[in-house]
Image (cartoon, rainbow, N blue to C red; front, top):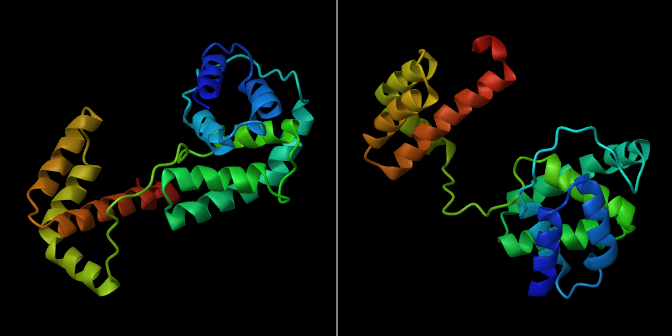
Length: 211
């Protein structure tokens, strides 16, 4: 299996064309024959692709057929990825789920042409791929969270100022937010602090007029 993974890594590293066609070759020639196909999926999704600004030209599929498969299956793939991420499996379990559900079940077509599109969707459409398991997750009851926010009012007021005021660089701004957070003694309170900052960022994304 190691030799096969090394061969796939070499193929991707030297590939000059569209990555879809590399995925097509791998799905057609290697995936079903491998002793651990989930490891191939993992290797493909963890590979850092070279950027290519040239016009996309497919050798093994038309643009129309590619687009149709994306339209049909991308929403389902997205829902599955979100579901598995909520379950928070190990990395091995996650890639096993990807293979057994998307590449080896009646839910999806199993021809190499379609599977290469699925691989393109997974590698290009989701910023949370490659997958990493969340560790030491803190789940806090609403009333406890509210109490922590009230307790952190002074720190959060200062952080909001630093978040919205102009700086010459993001590192300057980040250094101030880090300083405020580092002065909070409790680890749980630090986590609440950063959750408020993250919520502010999400609020700005959903309503740009607040920026």
